[in-house]
Amino acid sequence: MRPKNFTLAVLIVVLAGMGIWWFLRPAATVPEKTASAPAPSKTTVPSLSKIEAPKQVAPPAPNSAAAPVAATPPKDPNAGSRIELNAALTDMANLYRTNNLVAILRAYTPPDKIHEDRVQALQAQQDQIQARVDAMGRQGKEATQHRYEARAQAFEALLNQAPIFNAAGDEATYIYTTPSMSDLENGAFTTSDIHNSLVFVKINGKWYMKPDDAGN
Image 1 (cartoon, rainbow, N blue to C red):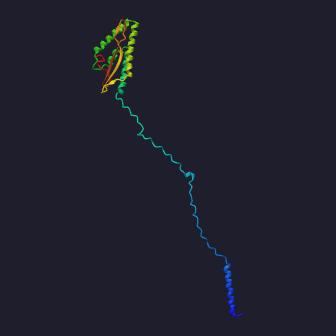
Image 2: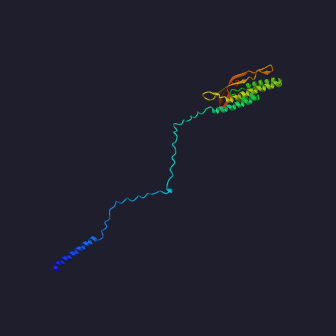
C-alpha cells in the first residue's frame, strides 16, 4: 500500500472510532426545571393554657331616666307637735278617768291665765258633785264613773284624729264630742253630749288648752 493511501486509511479509522464513541457515550444529565411548590406555612397552635375564656359582657344598665321615680313625700313640719299633743291627750284622759279635773286645770292652763280663785271654784264644784253622787249610793257612783270613763275615752279618740294647725304651727284644733259632766237630773246623769272644739296653743315649748277652752 502506498503511504498516501495508508495515511488516509488511518484517518478514516480514527474518524470512525470517534464517531462510534460519540454515539456510545452516556447522555449528560440535564437538570429539568420544575415549578417548586411553595412550602406550607407553619401554623402556630396556641396551647390550651394560653387560650383566654371569652369575657362576660355585662348587660347594659337600664335607662334610669325612663324608670319612674317615686316622689319623696314632703316632710310633715308638725310631726313633732303631733307626738307632743298625743302625750298631752293621754295624760288628760288619765286624769279624767280618776276625776282629777283640778289637776287638768293646773297642768294645761297657760301660766299667765291660771287664777287661784278659779282653781278653788272648780274644786268646790267637784266636791259638791261628789257629795251628791255619794248620796245616790251605788247607782250614782256607777253613773259618775261611767261619765268620767266616757270623757276619758273621748280624749283618747282624739289620738287618731289629725288636728288642724294654724300657719305658724303653734295652735292645734280638735273637733270632739264628749258627754256632759253636769247634767244631773232625778238622781241620774242625762245622756246629752257636748259637740265642741278643743284648741291647744304652744307656749314656750309646751302645749296648753287655749284660755277659752280652759274655762278662763
